[in-house]
Length: 233
Image (tube, rainbow, N blue to C red):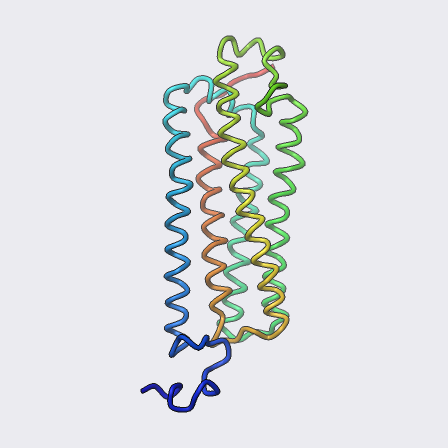
């Protein structure tokens, strides 16, 4: 019988749920659960990536045109923003592991939130809004008539933009969920819920945040960096 069972629940370390015997067992169970969830996310995004690659191979010229309607500079900037956000997320976990003050952990978490919000702000204000103004958002007002250089490829270009908005939109939803998780972590840190012995929620949430960042690292070249140069007027 374990020491925890011998001395009752009061012997359990802070943060240890009653169904676990040790912090290590609880951490392993939490990590396994998150990895199982991430596998389902890989299947989910993998289906979209597969469909995109199939249609890209079928309609490559139109997808190349569509790719060059996107603003590469903002896509590249957002890639850098998310890479730095993964760094700040890792630093928050490291701060908890090494017993740093809760102020240090909160600082790294808030920096991660700022970077995540920056990503969404750039996407919304400088990309999606620009696409709306330029009439390249799929729908009734998609700008076929203003793009004679597309020839008869307008419908296929619109298909590319459908993939673009669907894939980046779902990624943005995951980013918003991640910001919600970070908000909860800030509150938990402020309430002294974490220590060098117990920081599992930070670690598990970090896995999710890194996964969302990795998805974007695949989205960026697939959507923004197709083929050669297309000069649209």
